[in-house]
Image 1 (tube, rainbow, N blue to C red):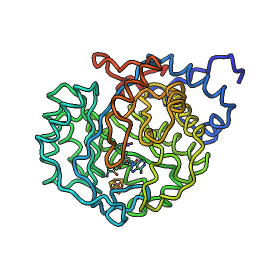
Image 2 (image 1 turned 180 degrees about the horizontal axis):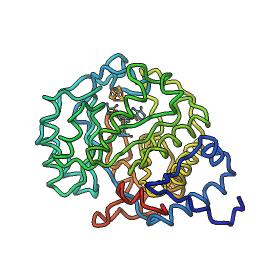
Image 3 (image 1 turned 120 degrees about the vertical axis):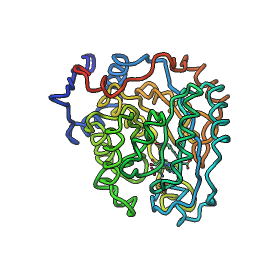
Length: 343
Ligand code: SAM
Ligand code: DTB
Ligand code: SF4
């Protein structure tokens, strides 16, 4: 494509959804860096305020002791990472943390639990958390593992806006990273979340030893969900000592930027979140990610068990870049908008 030409419009519509072949997504990855950034920035400006970044704060409401074997995760009980198993936080403690997050400027509060799947007795307090956090005027998100029939509906009833459940990597690489479930299990939970009427937050991790083609495979799989997720977290692997991936080779930072840019091009209306790994990432690389179309971050000095830039550092970075927070009165696109013709 001529570098000065605008990227072609790729109309999606409910009757003829746009789907992406892995080859097409891989071809985007292979573009010269400037051409890729130009396309991504053009698409970004067509659909979003290029200087607005939405902020979500994470809280681990149930840390550690997880029975799963995800090779990246410090919370898997079987790896010796120094993360112990803690009981679930009280509803009051969670609501207090949400109040602080809101005062600091977050618009969404995401509650994470180290479960394979929530037991019904554990879901009850989570429903109370969701109700009370939402009553503060925050968008709510939860990531609790695989859902059983009926649980997505209960979460939706309680007022959950987003459910986070990542596909994590390309279908053919998934089994190298996790053996205690399949990617189809993840797709099944995502379908339940959709049927219950919640927004989907679904992305992946880069830097786990996957090939560029596998990164393209992850992004194509996400883009081909109908509709594609409203929120797409792109995590950079945090190499936690004690996990099987602790000694993984470092990823070229520009490859991470490319992944963000490709996600932006193929999922134009999604909020693309620059997620885990920001603490280890230089500020110029973060700036390139925003230029590539990232328009959301995790905000607050902790992710779940690992660190994140503190609020002051992020304020300073946003000020240097002329970035402002997303206006909560103008919420991001919903599934209906994503499926609307011409998007
Ligand atoms: N147990 C639930 C599940 O697996 O869906 C929810 C919590 S789990 C920690 C949420 C996500 O965190 C994972 O899907 C993965 O994408 C991300 N994650 C976990 N450890 C990570 C790491 N070391 N680096 C980057 N992302 C990580
Ligand atoms: C997502 O995609 N990334 C967040 C959130 N969803 C739950 C989690 C990142 C976890 C990084 C490792 C940790 O802090 O334990
Ligand atoms: Fe458990 Fe989730 Fe970590 Fe996997 S990613 S070990 S399911 S907490």
